[in-house]
Length: 203
Image (tube, rainbow, N blue to C red; front, top):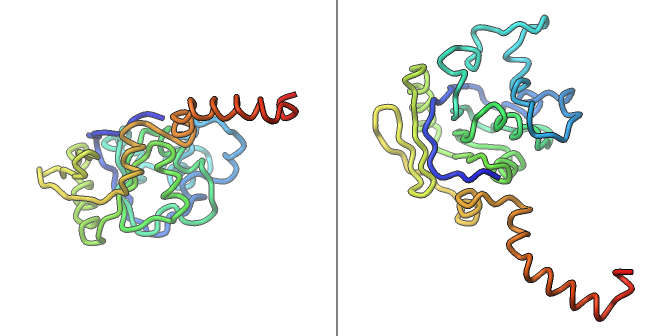
């Protein structure tokens, strides 16, 4: 998993509450277990017309936001059915941070496991960031995970909270597999001892 330390980029505004995982990545695109290639289907129903053409009014289709690295959105983002493809699609598009008043629990947890930083802020603060993000290509924000601060386009700073263990994992690029591999010496010692005491398990 790619480390997350300091992120600077354009923030795209998506002023919608209750954006569910099917809105983020429709179920018909879940046939793959590959993490790459899903970005083109991110917000598919919002981005494309029935004939496959782009809807020019959707934020990620606007020139200023095509390279967005952050998403500022409404409350309860990522609700609905559980699917890890939702953060995969965001990540494949290039979004590494989502800022909202609240998130669905499973989506929130899946973000951390896939290298995306979800930040919960008070609704009025998110409202200010949404307004700032509407300034297009000038809506550049910086998220510093180490100091736990967001720098808005005007240079103001906003503090945010993140649980210490999750912060450690993002800073060090540790997903569940990476955490397990940190215990490789202890795992090897256990397996050798078990192989001696219970050799039939390894036959």
